[in-house]
Length: 157
Ligand code: IMP
Image (cartoon, rainbow, N blue to C red; front, side):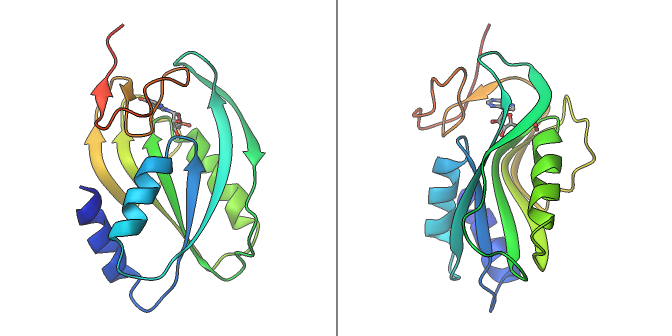
């Protein structure tokens, strides 16, 4: 799935050099695999927005705990998410990134989870769509655990 989405992105961004904005922490494995599959040049930066505490319910109180460090004015941005759930984090990050005057902002997520969507966020690239469940592995955690699992699992409570 990662190779397939990398192929689409490489074709859509041919002759451009997008900035991949990895959303920490969950997207770190997906981003590193994705960048190695791309056939175009990219710049990479990271942001971190916390919305989840040690449990699985989304506090709608999103905070930016790490901002961008490079100049993104007039650049093509591709936000790289691990999973979009309510969409509130993405909506928050979209507004934050827009405030720097980029040329375009698009979104690529490993997982697009529909069950609890609240914000009408546009997702340009989704590797896989899931209806519900709490997923861990391949960068995704539950209370900071399971990120290192090489595949994606649904947590049983
Ligand atoms: P949203 O703001 O509700 O869309 O939440 C986005 C963030 O919540 C993601 O970037 C993840 O860090 C976390 N998240 C949402 N659903 C899951 C899940 O099923 N497993 C692990 N983390 C999740």
